[in-house]
Length: 329
Image 1: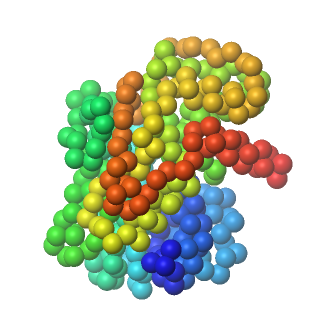
Image 2: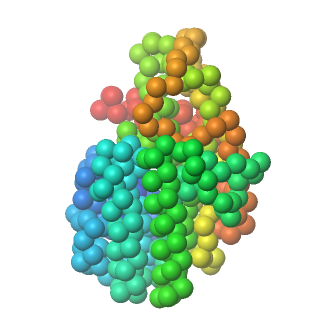
């Protein structure tokens, strides 16, 4: 953590699930200042409530669509974590604004980094950038396939792909260092309701807690790579601190977990003997997913020394403990 200690960082979209945990990780690494930029259109004050009494945290109400606000927030920063963005569900609700935030918002962030002399930008991309590409092991140089995706999933994935290209352009033309991290399906404490795959974990846990049978969609064989939010935060810090840059890197567990396996993990954590119900797939929004993903994490380990540490069962257990604590409070 020596590379983080004493430095100043800006997190755009800071009042978010990942932003709040990233702030925790930076503070633990002895960062001098952590600035959280958010317009609270999607982020919530509750997510960062535990950070507001910390003197090293600065909350900035601002919008990545306004360059002057991002530039002001970037002054004197050593690095920017570009987390601000629309996920699939809000993208479907407002595609015009979602596209602007994911593309123009990142462009403004890179411009601000350029003018403020920020050393590096870590961009939150997504495994959605692969579309429905298929390979036994899906590495970062795999071609994107969007032919059979739903329109909203394709637009979201392409917006992240475009963002990666913007990062490359600013590195080439202006010398702004970057690492672009393709996040798998992130879940955990302080979870929101904007991520399709994380929602499945939350909804399943809630049903089991109430004594209702969990629901398995379709035949239950659809898989996703579920990654706990603290592992994502650690990956972001590693990507900022590493001497390697200019890379696109998967942040994934490398483990395909089916919907059936998720349900059984929740039942086990809750100590429940409920029997799941199978129902037809009627989802309006769904992310790309078949019966095999196989995301590689070889580059993450080799380039930034990152290895995930939280298993699906342990992650669900931690999420459950957080939920119970919220109810007591």
